[in-house]
Image 1 (tube, helix red, strand yellow):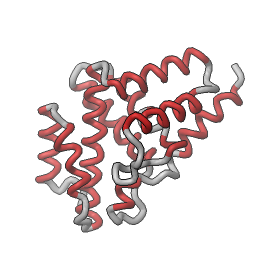
Image 2 (tube, rainbow, N blue to C red; image 1 turned 90 degrees about the vertical axis):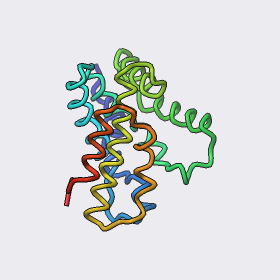
Image 3 (cartoon, rainbow, N blue to C red; image 1 turned 90 degrees about the horizontal axis):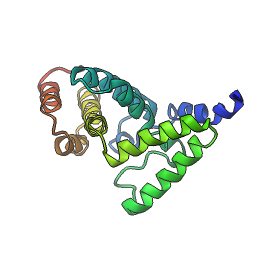
Image 4 (cartoon, helix red, strand yellow; image 1 turned 30 degrees about the vertical axis):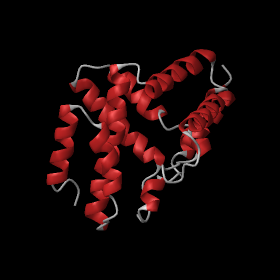
Length: 184
C-alpha cells in the first residue's frame, strides 16, 4: 500500500482542527470550538451511549469521526449562511466526501462511504442515535458557552437538540445539564 495516498485523507481530517464552528462565531463566541473538537466530543458520546444502549459503539464512533469530514472542503455552513437547497447541499457534501475518500484503498473507501451514507440516510439504529448525539453535543456546548462566556444569544443553538433528541435518556441528560453547573 502506498502510504502517500493516505496523506490527503489525513490532511482533510487534520484541517478540521482549524475550521471554527460557525454557529458559535455568529453567536459572538471568541475562540469557539473547531469542527474537530465537535467530532471528538461526538465520538466520546457515541462510545458511552452506544455501549450503554447495546449498540455497535465502534460503528458509531466511526460515524462521529466521519460525519463532518466534508467540512474540510465545504467549510462549516450554518443554516443562516445556507443559500442552497438541501438537495444542492447534499450534492456539495457528496462531492467533497468523494474527493476526500478518493485516494484511500478501495475497501476503506467503501467502508467509510457506507458509514457516511448510513448516517446521512438514517438507515440504522446507530445512525439515528448518532444524529441525536450530534445535536445533543451542540446543546451541551451551548450550555458551556452560556455559563463560561455569559453568552445570551445561544438559545437558537439549543433548539435543534430540543427538536431532534427523542431518546428518553438523552433528553434526561440534556435537562440535567441545563439544571446543573455542567461547566462553570
